[in-house]
Length: 128
Image (cartoon, rainbow, N blue to C red; front, side):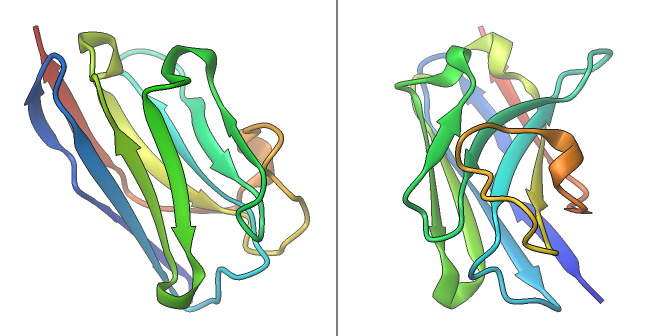
């Protein structure tokens, strides 16, 4: 059974930094696209940062470009999201997702429909 678990969320002031981690069990993430999505309260979920298998391709939503960095460590089955210069509009529940069937590369865009294994989320709150 595939399990995906996020950690690292919390409360931070504007301009601060956080690093989210996502650890998967029940599968090997090597060769599979992975991504971070977020959902602010009362709004739709959006793709934030996705990385293709091998880690050579990445895609970021425009609003986080230059501030967030997605990376992966296949040896430890872990995905990271390093977030700098956080803003109140970054406040959301952050979810990790994996294309467990390895159907897509995933590093050129973040399409929610391409991911089938999801974590429960970790809350990020940025105070103004």
